[in-house]
Image (cartoon, rainbow, N blue to C red; front, side, top):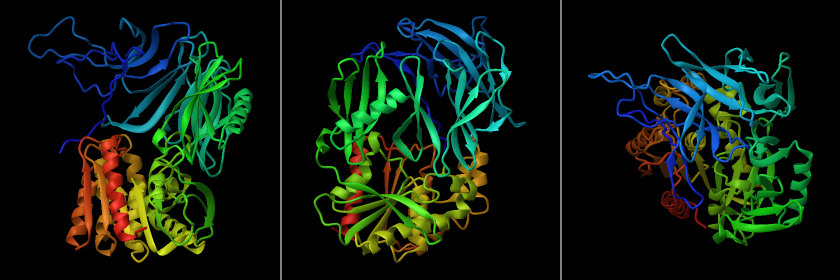
Length: 545
């Protein structure tokens, strides 16, 4: 079986969807290599109507039988100034091998370069060295030594302050810092939490100026650094029904009009156009018009795990029903199945069908939190304990019927859901695992040829036998639904197939639902509809309404 690799293409098109053009290097039957990516736009060049700065993967050509003097010879990732209408391109930064990133300052100047560290076997080690330029200089200077990409990640260069915004590992979590791109290279911590990780910037305008930042654990809330946008977001949220989360999406060239999104856990949201001069706010389009007025109510809770650790969670309840002795689903997926505004479509689906849903931020919930980085898969029992504590919490509150509990998880959450069903077989009456990691030995082997292979090996450690659900199939009593895409590069579909086979051999109830050509995101309406139908059928017959 071949190794799945992601492939993408960058295109331009007219406003009406016509005139589609590919912006990458033209493919050739003589290309010496596989062109996985065309590149990314790194600067929209506000002073130009048709040009952008774009990274480009250059592949040389090889003519085995008839060598040619006009064959392409450049190799690596460079930067071109590209006219998206004519496709004429001028090389701004010559391609280099082992380039991880190029960053521009939003004004047409390339200011940061990342270079992969390569082992003696020519594998990328997962460590990157960053070089920077001072304003009006073409000379590269060292900004960092080789650093693990999990410990340091550049986010963007700000020309106004001549600095680099970045995420750096700081006191156990990812903090937002700002580094001066001058001889001092002084670094300031702008935002840090001992519980959650900063993971992105909020940037606006063609110059991509920084106005705020966000946390991984709260994928929709933006903390605004810019006082004007902070004030505006508060005012707009108060003015709209339900006080939704406000996200500024874009602004007009003159900055007078803003495109914004407003939504929250109870509302799939709408897009609006705001006129700064007239203060007029006009609705453009709802995101999910069929769900207007039908969303289930949500609320935040906190409970104590057996060791006393406080676990935050979100509870979604069936609309129009008394919150007493409800069939309940423990959702082990962190926050990654949310739409903009915090709307969790899977939790909403379950709640509207009559199920209470609790979604705890359990330790290890997404493979990125502080606890998981330190413990890895050897700490699986703590993750399971946190999930069980969530079920017990709702039962004690009288919301959940303790005899009608199910668990559902995806990726790492799918792994923990299966382990929970094996460790606490008397608790759960049904299990759903979407793209789960089931055999840590084969999972480690699957990643051996990738840059993240070293990290995966470290996280697994010596837990591959003890923490593999496929080896605990005989302990699982509840019926299991496994959902998997067939071209998933993150978790191979063999993981679900092996689990399904192990369960069946152990005489357990198992159903494997595979979707050809999709990965673990299942970005296909028909696939998601089928998956939800199967989940609903399983829950209806096991824990009922």
